Amino acid sequence: MTECIKTYKPAAENFSLEGEVTDIRPYGEGHINLTLLVTTTEKRYIMQKMNTRVFPDPDNLMRNICRVTEHLKKRGVETLDVIPTKDGKAFLKGEECYRVYAFIENTVTYQQVTDKRVFFNSGKAFGEFQNYLAEFDASLLTETIPHFHDTPKRFRDFLAALESDKCGRAKDCKREIDFLLSHKDTYARAAEGLADGSLPLRVTHNDTKLNNILMDEKTNEARAVIDLDTIMPGSMLYDFGDSIRFGASTAAEDEKDLEKVHFDIGLFETYAKGYCGAVKDSITEKEKELLPYGAYLMTVECGMRFLTDYLSGDTYFAIKYPEHNLVRCRTQLALAGEMEKQFGEMGKIVEKAIK
Image (cartoon, rainbow, N blue to C red; front, top):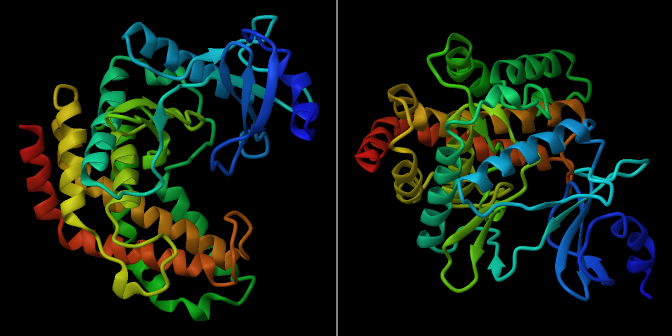
């Protein structure tokens, strides 16, 4: 018996699995939860040890996931299938918390955009995900990470870190600080829209990276949206914007050479065609108008968070060298600056994609 089976089989045997457990091994590339592939004599499953430091309220987190997946199943949509414990609970609660999903066979994930068709399909998948949940009452969901995309609060956090400058690093990033200060009037439009009702409160995924979609291994068509831990109430702008931030860049998030970092409007158009085509029957005029702004907002917010962490001594994001968060910040602000200059063209692309 391998060490992995010896360690995790007792937890796995608390769940309503078909067959006897024959193998357990690490699986995937996730960084938050410990993910394991559990094989039985009948089926395969994904078991995760939940990270309760990042998500300290597993009860409401799993309640969110169950509510959303049950809604999707009623619509005939392939989604995560939560396997209950033997006493009917959604997860195993104790000093360590575990959950199990049925393994979705014959699928692949992509870590980066290598093919426009795959990026189009990811846009279509996240758009359909949004569309299928358009009638779901988002107020039924709990904020698993409060203020996650509250950009005005993120800006206040940045200002506090700048004022304290406890590591003496502000002198090294004057250009980035000046960018964020000079754009302070651009941060509140989504938050204000949600507050005054001009933007509808929706179910948002909040981690719309390409690798959170399972693609069919033969057709590359999207099968299921996964990693639902950050399912929360929010704005469509967040999910669309974060996909563009991640997928429409010409370089890695931590590319040091800013000459290589550009916003690829061709990839923006590819994703927008997939996403907007899927949501055209549920998107509002205000959302349509602000989708390009959503891409900018999520990108500048991410840069702001990287710089806040850099000024605070790198307490949140994992780093590989002392300037890592500053480098990340610079790529995001470079992208945001280029997006800002192309709002007009981005708006025309969105308009065309929705018709």
